Every structure is written in C-alpha cells, then in structure tokens.
Length: 171
Ligand code: ZN
Image (cartoon, rainbow, N blue to C red; front, top):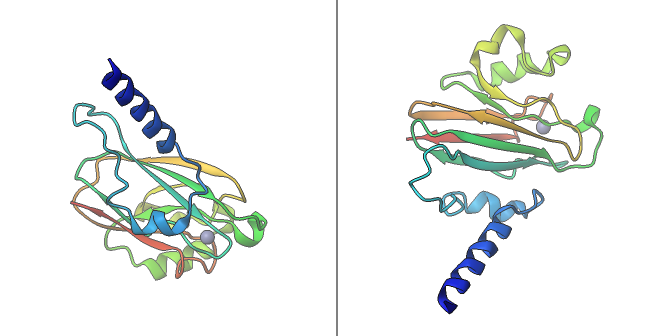
C-alpha cells in the first residue's frame, strides 16, 4: 500500500516535470537530447516523439540535433522565446528534404517575404514548417513517416539560417 502510493506520486511528479515550461534553459535542452527522450512504454504505439524547440533574440535554436526512429511520428513544438518584434527578429522552423542546398534555399526564402519566407519555387524541398512567429508565439507541427537520413532544419527569416540550423537524424 505504501509502496503503491509512493510510485503513484513519483509518476505524478514525472508528469509535472514532463510538461515543463518552454523557457527551460537552452543549455540543458541542447546537450541532453538523447537522454531527454520520453521514457514512454513501448505499448503506446501512437504517441509521437515530442520535441520542444525555442528560437531567441540571439538567433539560436535551443535544440540543434534531434534523433528519431524510422517511421516515428515527431511533434515539434516551436516557440519564439525572444522579445524583439516579429519584423526584426521573427523565427520559423523549416524542415528540408535531404540533399537540399540549404544556402540556395535560404537565399530564395529571404526574398519570399510575401509567402512567409517559404519560397514558392522551392516549396517541394520543404517537408514541414511553421509560420514565422513573433515573440512569445508558439506553433506545433507534426512530422510523419520519415525515411532514414539526415534532415536539415533552419529558420528562413532573412540572415538567420547560418546561425539557426540543426539536424534531424532518422535511423
Ligand atoms: Zn530566426
């Protein structure tokens, strides 16, 4: 009886800490990516891998490396954690197909203000993306059914991709 109560409260504690705030320290998020994977039971097939990423006024993604399994659903919760206006320091999260020339894509994207910095002519290179977000805004995007490979993600706000870049490795 006592043990059961203990384990329940422990579980509740894990849940509480699991739905942590999006402004968690960037340093721990970027260095502990593998260990941060949810300890979900294998019996729950539909549960996606949840990845929380922030972008900030220093043009940094909090997470620059993600690992996932082939076919695993990935829910990315992207938040602009900065405070500068969207017009000056907006951020998005754009996942590109393997083999995309990132510099070429980002160059085209920077000129695509009317389409939220997603270049229409290269849209087929985009697997998933959020809108460009202003400060304290958040958006979720689901990524499904990726084959094994290395996928680059960037922020396509003009000038940001050099600093705001990460890799999603699927294997
Ligand atoms: Zn950005």
